Length: 327
Ligand code: HEC
Ligand code: HEC
Image (cartoon, rainbow, N blue to C red; front, side, top):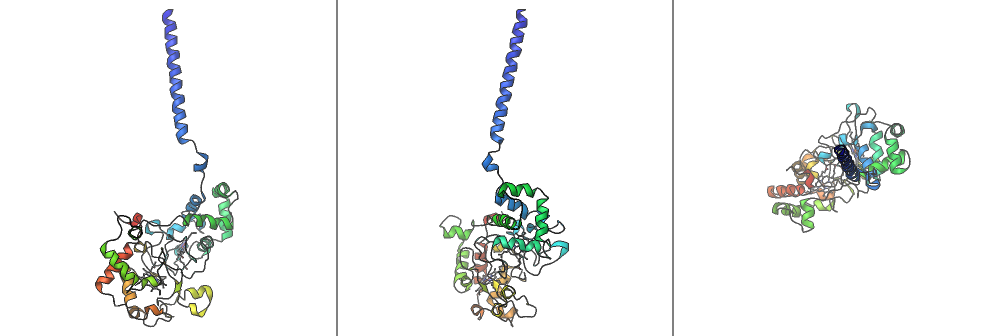
């Protein structure tokens, strides 16, 4: 009899202990994983990122923004012309979609004024994603994105918030962990002696700074380095957007951050390496003797020495964000 009571008491105690342990366990688990309402809410930038990588915005669901703006190449492409829907090729090189926050206009000819406006361009472009904005909005409203937009905006997807969300993601793609930035800020691991010599060529004898200035190395002006002669070089650039004859052959000066990972170069992707670019600036008349609107800064050859060319190239490498430097 006494033994039975003891046994029961013993089992009771074990059970209680068991329950207490489980409750504690659940409490700890919940406190770690419980959605903290604020931090768990999808942000506009995250929603934009999802769309940037989602082929839902292309006619045949095969192409996303990231098909051409590849994250591993600073959101640019490695071929002269990128492949859009049905294997179609465009006629301009894909620029980096990074460091675009401060740009005054977008595209090589500056035809878009804001990132939000720009984002709708490739969706409708027949050689890129080839989907009407109307159809894109219908698709989004018939997908998981309907709820996600409601969460972020309180409204379902529409023409305005679609551009806004993608732009919000692009605005996060700024880079500043480079040897050049560290050197400017007097921090360790700045530029090498060679890069500093290259910086000097960039600013003086090379005249690069005349057009590639500001922290992103572009003043957002439209200039011509002479890649237009109306024959084999026949993209009239800024003129397409303005129809002003004095804009023929002018292109938006591209920023140079991460330029070492965004080859090939120029609006037509015609230069494969930085060395080719430097050789061009050195003797522009050799490649295109009959350029129609070449800037007066490029009227005379630079006559850089071999050492100066190598130093300049080395400086351009100092503009690469650490995340793209192969370890
Ligand atoms: C098929 C390839 C392709 C796709 C898909 C594509 N782009 Fe582009 N992107 C380009 C090309 C080519 C240009 C330059 C076109 C021009 O200047 O006329 C460009 C230009 C841009 C620019 C301007 C950068 C600057 O400095 O002026 C941004 C930003 C951009 N794209 C973002 C996007 C977004 C967002 C998407 C998806 C909605 C997208 N792209 C889809 C090829 C593509
Ligand atoms: C007169 C203004 C001007 C000067 C001076 C100038 N650039 Fe440029 N740069 C441009 C323009 C405009 C483009 C785009 C041209 C095109 O695509 O037709 C460009 C393109 C480039 C590109 C290609 C970037 C890309 O993403 O495709 C590099 C690299 C470059 N320049 C480096 C330099 C260097 C180095 C110097 C000095 C030796 C220099 N630039 C001098 C205006 C200039």
